[in-house]
Image (cartoon, rainbow, N blue to C red):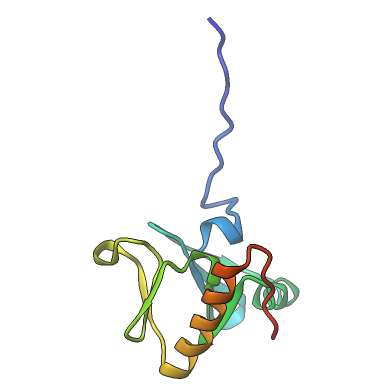
Amino acid sequence: MVNATLSERNIYEDFDLDADILYFRTGTQGLVSFHGRNYNIKKRMTAEQLQELIHHQGFYAVGGGCYININKIKTIDSGNIYFDSDIADSRQMAVNRRKQYVIQQLFVQRSSSKDWRMTP
């Protein structure tokens, strides 16, 4: 019998921004609140880390210090963004009409091309 040790990743300490985070909100004094599928994580970041995070390619600012992960959007409907295919149980976020239009364009662009790039 072979004992194999599986290295499990602690999502609270070592999360992958693109794969694990649906959206994040920036706060005062470098505090950032990351929101995943079933969890929220708050981390303090330096000014340099915060600038790098804000300019991350896969995220789009929807206002109020909130940035959504374009790759995690499943549906956009009636001013709401849904991050799961089952709308009833999905995490969602309300956005204004102007932002919704831009996000829909990015969403369509992402869906039609595997190698899409966001422009600021």
